[in-house]
Image (cartoon, rainbow over all chains, first blue to last red; front, side):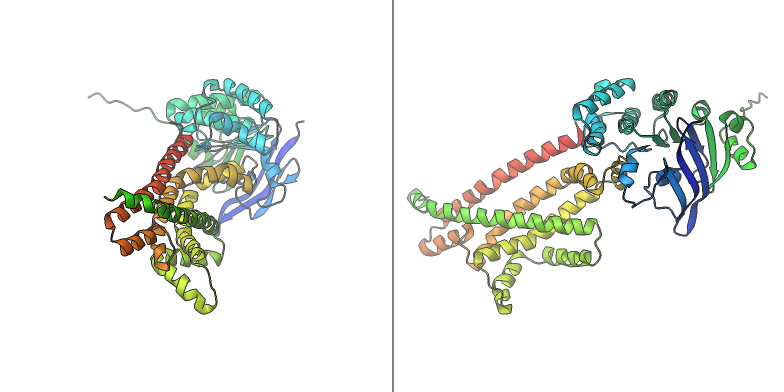
Length: 253
Length: 219
């Protein structure tokens, strides 16, 4: 039985009197790949932001390896180092080269040896096919390349868990694949990941478990085959229907 | 053009130029300090202080330096604060420049998207590291053009110091014109010396600007 990494109990998040997340329970074990799906505004991105303590929460607990994650708590910067986050809009630092983007936090925050971090960063860059871009600035990269660098930047911190917040949503279609391939590779390596996405085919391929959230609540939690083939709830059926198209019939008079 | 006259009074201009530069540099340094503090207060929305800063910025930007200098030079002694003319010049320049510097720094800070901070925070950085490694470098490259323009503007503004009888370049030129009626020579020297002070600043400024821009965008 794998160790429980992340445990969320009865999480409630309110914003201006409105409940964004309402009594969320979730457990992530080491090596799990969880995919969170749901309609826009259902609270799935907010869930990731709460796990990284970018948002204050109003109720419940979020624990990483038994330690309380809460915005403003004393050891939060240490805890955040164990949680890798990849944003939809990449958020690379535009004033730094690719290699400096990746090594900044490991060297300055984790105080690791610069040469060793650089070596690891170069290996990771090579693995995502961007070894030749180490000295480029983010401006010079395509969206897909930027996102791969952002993933490497998160990886280089040696996080316990990786959070992906709709990381392909801002990409041109032909660049989605190169980013998803990197994520599939990470899943194969046994990394623990929590992925928010609208890519249903990808979700099916990568997930150990699919979490369906609607209106701030977890409505369904199931293995991918089960969720996509035989959704239990009416709400999930409706949601999945949005992604299938009836064949257009051509009438010939 | 009487070159003998020019040669004779060149040392006088040199002395005046040194005074202009000295007060200019010290005044601008304090202006930068005031500007940094004010920008930080506004960026972090410090309660109460931010309103005081807002009033100061409007007051300082919407009154002429000459009026501010008169206030300091003639007004302050009436409430018991007596300063030398030089110190008045420095204080005046810092008072005027502080608000301009504050605005240029603030616009730089505000140009950095909040999600950039979140990205840094999520890498485990504390607020000091977020500021030092992520926000300030980006804010600076945005602020540099306005910052350089402010320095040139403030150095030019020093020409009103003659009004509180500081022996700066303007004062010297007016003095010589009054004494010898050598208008052409006196004004020629005046222009030359201002250019000698300001041209290097302008050139260095645009070099720094270009470097910072390249560093920022990697073209």
